[in-house]
Image 1: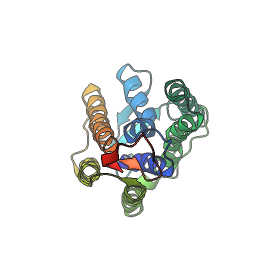
Image 2: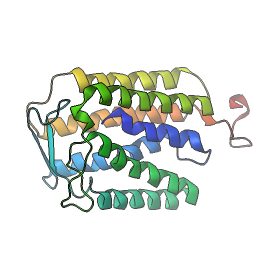
Image 3: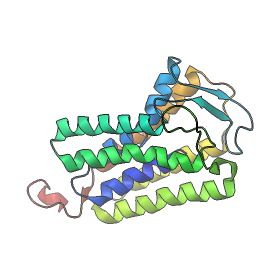
Image 4: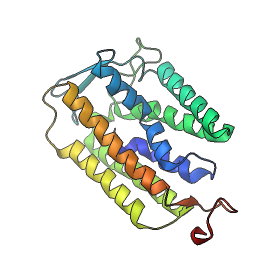
Length: 226
């Protein structure tokens, strides 16, 4: 799953005016993957390319106990929430951010083959929708488009930034689905994925700074934005 994870960021940003900014929520939604590819760079967590691992991609994610176990994801979520709490001094803001981090594991549970764990060891979990492209592709696209529509409906601001953002996300997903598969695991692959996350997050940060929640009123909203 790639852009489907950001559906949680759109929903959270739409849910409440005290939610973190969209760019922050984009980091939250993919935080454990940021962690996974960073740890893979130094050999702490590991993947390999295995053609046919699933119908949709050749990634064999065979060792990721610190990021893609339920317990590991919960630790990442708690750490992110604590950072937000210290930064924003708002318990609701922190809770929303932590929940978005936690959403990653449950969305992965739908798509991954059994390679997720509860605490780093067996049992291995995953419903394997990556082996069913006719279900996985429209489901992931539908999730992000529905969440994006909710975000646009619940926020105000110029229309161009969110349209550019969603076009970028769909382009990244098309490359992921239809581009040439990676030939080997290694720094080039890891840095490419992290770069894609970075570009998407930058676009979300830009978009979030041009929009505000429809319930947001008062001095926090400049007159020209009301």
